[in-house]
Image (cartoon, rainbow, N blue to C red; front, side, top):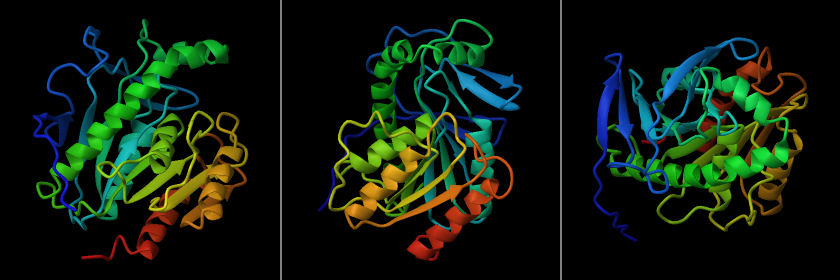
Length: 287
């Protein structure tokens, strides 16, 4: 079947003279036309000790290209409860490690809840104290992020030759809230946006309405820690069980310690297990 995609305009520029940044919409994204507050980045201390992005109004992709391209690509979805994006711990650091393995990475920045101070992390933690209120505030943002991810997949597939990647070896990896986006896509894809593999890392799946595993469901790589207090490990176990019960390919790595972030050894070595899994699936060595 030949797929016909609508012609679209994507704007791009570079960051620090290295990474190209792709604006996914030509103008404002649907549903956020009046959003005019500036996007920002800030360093967060304990427990992150890393940079986060906040007030994203214009969804984009930041391109990380390896020195030696093997044709595999990953759209990387950081988490942050739809208040921030953990663009360092779940973004640039992961992208750089995947680059070492020849994988081209597109760091995905999706629309977020508006925050009003220079401490968006604190605002997020305050919002988490009232889960009912939090659910209401992030509900519309979750739907926007799903639409933004569809747009991101369309861009990568349309521009595969430009980045010397194989449009049939394109996957999505997500962490926490970004893991929800990845897992939701694994259940609820269309012909146009089906990923070739999906890696939900300490993901949440309780907010996925339709968890029917499709006949052509992509293979899954799942990793989490049993001592995760924010995304209970049952999410990852249930996701794995759905795939296995449907007789689909899935691999699950559970670490006794590592928390929400898979920190420390051996949990922090999960990315090596992911590369081994890609190789075993035939993605890394395919020409």
